[in-house]
Amino acid sequence: MCLETTSTNSKTQALITQGYKVIAEYQLIEQMQLKGIYAIPSYSSAVLWFGVIFIHSGLYADGIFRFSILLPDLFPDAVSLPTVIFEKGVFHPHICTISHSLDLTPLFQYWNKKEHHIWHILKYIQLIFADPEGSVCMRLSSNGEPILLSDVNNMEAMRLLSHSRVDYSLRVKACIASSLEHMFDTPPIKDPHYIIFKRYQPEMHRAVMERLKSNSWYSLAAPSSQPSECVARIESEQQLRREEAAQRAGLGNSQN
Image (cartoon, rainbow, N blue to C red; front, top):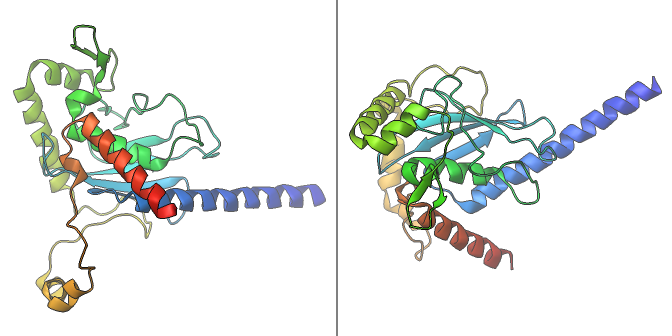
């Protein structure tokens, strides 16, 4: 009995410790102030996250795509990568048409808890939609030509992206239309943290809209506050990395 009690206590302590680490990951995301993408841990499990991305420009403009992040049981100590699954079929070279899983290997080969965080995954998701062409390029050749990845989750999407941008765009528009059509579907899981959308109801939302328009609401904001910018408008990997460097610098200054 003593051995069983000790084992149970150890597992409980491990879960509590993991919970604190997951909360720390969520706080990092809040500090990064990512725009247009949101993720939150499940109420029932620390290793299950719910997310959604809103895209405002580029080929995927107007898309609203849900996704889930499943962390390894031993997160963050495990070296295996998290699993990202999109809820509905999204047409993209890095997203499998069958499992709807996102290939994370272009971002990193294994998980290193000292270097990698969940916000890296969110940034990567932003990148593949903001710059699909750049996301499938390994590097540039000596002549400056892009070298495409030889293996991706959706080879048909890769082929169209490389040789027929018009056809690729048509497939993308179809998946965007599908995502909007299912935006108000009943949640597939009963969890209070699952991100849901409700249709506009005047009797319910008019009061909130009036508050947002009132002078008292705007007076709550600091006079020096700047309007936010949408990260989904990033047009290249280089721009995303510059923004990431600026955010890192801002975090460092705030901590000092």
